[in-house]
Image (cartoon, rainbow, N blue to C red; front, side, top):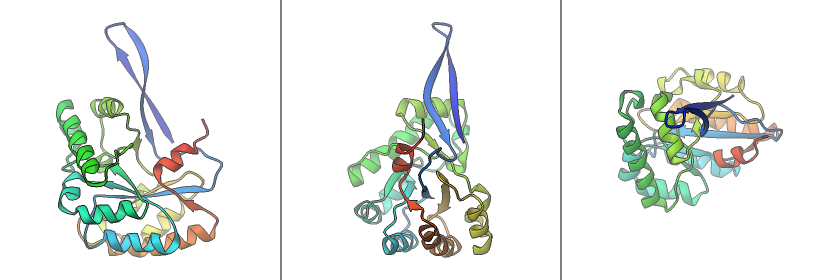
Length: 223
């Protein structure tokens, strides 16, 4: 599902189409899926997720928190060296809708800059913490030229440790061409998410899916 947001240009009294788009999935005829992670890098859990993807020759996208990039640059550099993509997930993981527009912009700017400083690459997409957004944040993302990336398997609530079986079952129900799956590699015990990934990654590959980065999935979108 894609949401396109319109803004009123009050100076000219006309409606302009802006580039801010919100993706839960991507419309494509190719057997592509993007697995994504939030809140890392984490020195305990992120390397274990990386190992699963390395073993299966697959790629993922990590929506990193800027303050964690600052704390654990070595983990981030390994993520980059192994071919994974970075997305902006803010610097301090606030409730973005409670911030002023200027504060929202600063969160994105600081996170973007630390990603550039650590891996030398600019992120091209954004996922808001808690998946919360408002009109101001959509406008800020348009200024950064960031599509907003959500996911199809939100009911996993893997961050809340609902059980590996639950995470796998909910994710399986959302598997189709163009799905974006969300898991967490940061904050607390991520053992259930890891166990789910260890099941899902080889299973999806066996079903003929290619696990790609968000940028690769967006490039395959049917316009």
